[in-house]
Amino acid sequence: MASPETRLLALILAGGEGTRLMPLTRDRAKPAVPFAGRYRIVDFVLSNFVNSGYYQIKVLTQYKASSLISHIARGWQLAPILGHYVEPVPAQQRVGRDWFKGSADAVFQNLNLISDSMPDVVAVFGADHIYKMDVRQMVELHQEKDADLTVAAIPVPIEQGSAFGIIEADAEGRIIDFVEKPADPPPMPGDPTRCLASMGNYLFRREVLVGEVVRDADNAESAHDFGKSIIGPMVGGDKRVYVYDFANNRPPGQEAKEQGYWRDVGTLDTYWECSMDLVAVSPVFSLYNREWPIRTTYQHLPPAKFVFSDTARRGIATNSLVSPGCIISGGHVSESILAPSVHVHSWAEVERSVLGEGCDVGRKARVRNAILDKFVTIDPGARVGFDPEEDLARGLTVTENGIVAVSKNTHVRA
Image (cartoon, rainbow, N blue to C red):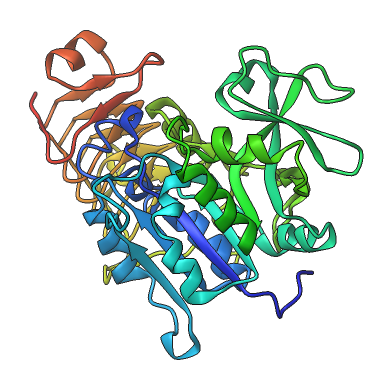
C-alpha cells in the first residue's frame, strides 16, 4: 500500500458546464447534478479520496458554482484541527482577466494552492464520473515506478475510443504514445476490440506538474488541456510517464462484478442508463458497501412512508431506491429512483424514471422513462414519457433514445 508518509494534495476539477446534460445543468455545474437520490455527482470522487485516507482536497469551480459550493460547505465538513479539509476554490482570475481556458490552465491559475501545502504528490482528478476507486493503490504504483506522472486508464470498446485520450504502453506500463480523441483509435495489444482510454485522473510529482503547467501557460497556441497540452508532450520525452490500469483497482468490500465500473455521465441518456444500473436486484454498481460508503450531506428528514393497503390502492415500490421523506400513498413505483421528499399519489404509476427532490406526482398520473429535476409537479391524470410529440409540445426535452427530461420547478399539466 502507499506510504503513509506521502503528502498528497487532491485538486478536483469541477468547473465543467455539462451542456449535454441540459436541463439538469441549467442552474448548476455538472458535478453538482443530483444522482442516485441522495447524492451529487461530485460526492463519488470526494468519497474515493476520503475513504482512501487523503483528507486535503481542493475543489476548483467555475461555471454556475453556487449549488456546488453550498453542497460542499454543508456536507463535507472534515476535521480542520487535524489539517483535514474539502474546500471549494472559485475561479479568481489571479493571473489575469481570463476565466479558466482549460483544465491545465485551471491548475496554473491556482498554483498558490500547491506552493502553500508543498505536497509530494498532486492528484488532479475530474469531478463528474461515477465510480469507486481506492486511490492508495494508484499512489502505490506511482511510487513503485518512481513516476513523474501516472495516468489512470480503463479499456473501452474501440468504437468509443474517439471520445477519449487513448494510451499505448509497453510491457512495463510506461506510456509510449498518447493520442487525444483519435478518429482511428489504436487497439490494445492482443485485443482488437478494445483500446485503453484515459479516465482524466492523474498523479504528478509536485515539481513536474508545476513545471509543465507553467510551460504550457507560456504557449499562446496551446489548448491548455491536460490531455492535449500536458500528457501528450510529456510522453516520449525524458519524463517517467506510466499508466495505471483501473480495471485492477478493488476497494475494500467491493464485489468482483463491480470491478472496473466507471461511467462518464456526459449525456441525459448515459445519466439515465447509469441510474438504471443502480436499481437491479443485484446491481453492477452498488451503494451498499459499508466498507466504502458514498458520503454526502445529511438532511433531517423522516423515513420513507408507504400507505394504503387496499388491493386497488396500495403504496408499492419495487426494484427502486426510495430516499428519506418520500411518501408513496397508493401509487406504484418500479425500477425508479426517488430523491428525498417525493410524493406519489393514489393510482399514479412511475416506471424506469428518476425523480428529483420534492417532486409531486398526482393521482392517476403516469411517468415512464423520464428524468424529473427538483420540485416538478405532475398534474393528476397527466402523462410523461408516453408520447414524444406531446412531451415536446410541452417544452420538455426528449433524447435520441426517448428519455424525457423535465426542468426544475416545471408544472406538467394534464
